[in-house]
Image (cartoon, rainbow, N blue to C red; front, side, top):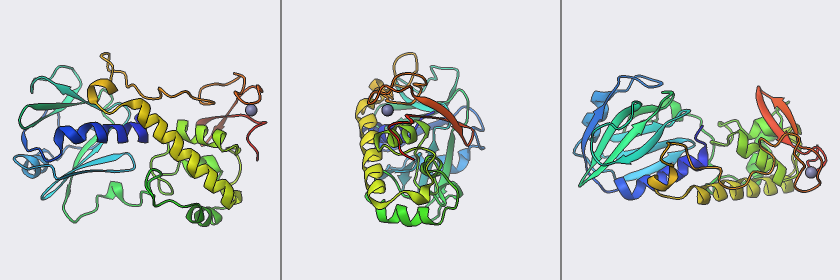
Length: 273
Ligand SMILES: [Zn+2]
């Protein structure tokens, strides 16, 4: 599943291709993805318009035109690829964009959990409501996180990090790796994380996300190999998926537990409760 670094990488890859470019053609090859595609509204808002800005909110990307924005989410398996023409090259191509002069972008999504929606100017889309602050932005501080966590009765720090209403877009891999780097047990209640632990945790989280963005590269062609596999997580993982492997710090076996139906990988001796 595309995670925040991959979405940020996509945003960076799209920027030189679409920013300040006019969209001249747009075809949808099906009526719905996760939600129905409002094709008429999107075409009316985008065709012959120039993309003035590209922004990201959590794992959503917005392409802003004068009257509104195209809201994009990659779901489980969505991706964009550059192609030589409007002609779909793959079975799961669902939308084809042409930006002047000759940039063709194809949206491909085999599992169709992604979305392409329209947000009129000056409106907030319900999907974006309540998304927490961005871990890559400057707006998250240890003070605020400590305050936010104080009111959470039972939630573990792992589940706290993965709740997009508290912090935007931190997926399972990044939550596990961050907690290992910060030497904090994933089971520790969020409300018991102190100020210096929050400071360390946020700095590790930014560091790990940034490493992954750097590893992902910034062009669409490099980002995806020819078999369509996404080229992220190229940076080395310390605990995620490493059950029973020796911890890179203390050599104790990495444990796997289940929290909120998701696997958590951690080192019981390095990560303190
Ligand atoms: Zn260890």
